[in-house]
Length: 86
Ligand code: HEC
Ligand code: HEC
Image (tube, helix red, strand yellow):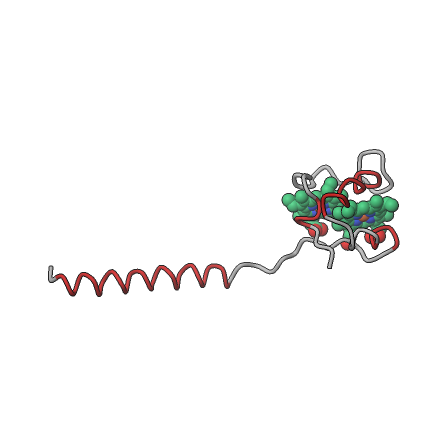
């Protein structure tokens, strides 16, 4: 094949792949995981460092807490990576 044609074809392929990735990310579903409630129980965590705040979640959301997590809850490591605060 002609060298120039090859380069053009590779460029088209590259652009097509980029467009594909872009569309894939563009169509990603919106974030649906619930944020932490903005109530007295949770307000103090908003200003804290994430790691520091997460030490307290278990007090209420642990097995013996007032609001234990359902058994179907996804892996619980680092609560605030999934449950956004704002
Ligand atoms: C003082 C007890 C307490 C602490 C500490 C606490 N929670 Fe909660 N949390 C509750 C209670 C009670 C509810 C249910 C009532 C409500 O929605 O406010 C709840 C509800 C939630 C919900 C569900 C919101 C919804 O829309 O159903 C999430 C998510 C949550 N907490 C995350 C966290 C995270 C993350 C932490 C640690 C940073 C945390 N909580 C610390 C008591 C607490
Ligand atoms: C990997 C992501 C992830 C992590 C980490 C995570 N959660 Fe969740 N959590 C979810 C999803 C998904 C749901 C269910 C869908 C929803 O309602 O947002 C949920 C639901 C909840 C609920 C509501 C339960 C109900 O049905 O009433 C609470 C409370 C909660 N999580 C607290 C926590 C706490 C506390 C931690 C840390 C110990 C934590 N989560 C860590 C993703 C996560």
